[in-house]
Structures are given as C-alpha cells and as structure tokens.
Length: 214
Image 1 (spheres, rainbow, N blue to C red):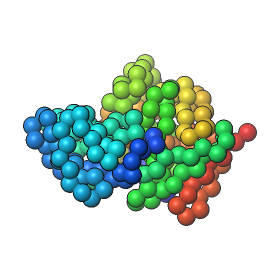
Image 2: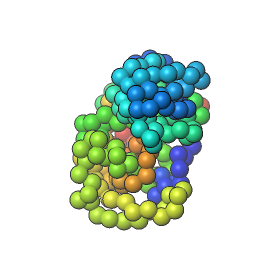
Image 3: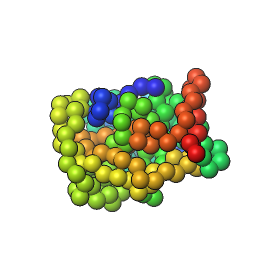
Image 4: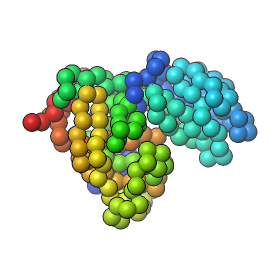
C-alpha cells in the first residue's frame, strides 16, 4: 500500500455513481467554469454541472471544489490527478472489502460522526488525519482539541488533536477514534492506524479485507 504523504508520526473516496476513476484540474475560466480532466478526457464544466459522477461546485483562484459520491474534494491546478478508487463493500457488520483504484491506493467513501467523507487507507499514518477545511465542512469542533506539532512534507506544522465520535467504512463502525486536524489542504481523509488497528487486515493482490477484531 502506498503512503499519501510524509505526515504525522512518519507518514500520515462513497460509492461513486458512475465509473469515474480519476480527476484533475487543468484550468479555470473566471469563477463560473473549470477545465477538468476526468479519466484522461478534458471536460469543461460550469458551476452546478457534472460529468462522470463529478459535479463542479465552485471555482476560486486557488482551485476548484467538486463533489464525488456525496463528498467534496478541492482540486488545484498542476496537482496530481486524484484517484477516486472504488467503494467499500460490506461483508456483514464487522468486515469490509476494498478494491484498489488506479495507482494501487485503497479509497472509499465513508462517514465521520455521521457525515460523508472520502477516505484513503494509509498504513503509514498513526492516526486518522484530515484538513481543517474538511473538519469545518463536517462540523467538527476541532479548535477545542489539544494543540501539537507534526512533521509533513512541507515541514513542521501545528495540528489539533481530536477524538472522533464515530468512523464508519462500509458496514463497519468504530467509536472514539483519535485523529489530527492539519492546516494543509488534502483531497481526502487519511485513514490511519487509530482506525485500522481495530481490524485484522489481509491484502491479496488488489483486494484489501478488513475484519473487525472482537
């Protein structure tokens, strides 16, 4: 499994309605339209329109915000394409099966405190990690959390330490999950070991199976 970034502690997308697997931002035309590349094909979308399950929500000088499978992603010009991957398949209440998307990443939609988010499995992250923008979107009162510092690819940054009431992936839900909120922009929530350690993980080729521990 690949790591997304050198985050904390040595490393730190919903069932998609259509088969879109990858999206990136190539340019914008004012604040009403953007040029996206969806599965390798350039598409000009106006705010509110969609293609391949990707809906353009807004355009700003720093990038474009899109919605995929009920969750929002921030795309930046020149950034690597975001791999959307496949959805988590539930196997009873305690097991989850993930299929790797392009690039070998395991990604899926899920929920934090009942709010839809996009996850990427990161076994190199000690805890679940999300951006301040995502924390605010889902209504997480992270500013009450203890302050700390962590090392990222861009150097040391301040973080807020929080405990998530619940984290749900597929049919499995766990409670009281330690997490960090970072000021950096991230296109998805990194699903680290504070969640993964509650499961036995078995990977065979492009399939990752999570079996919840008793």
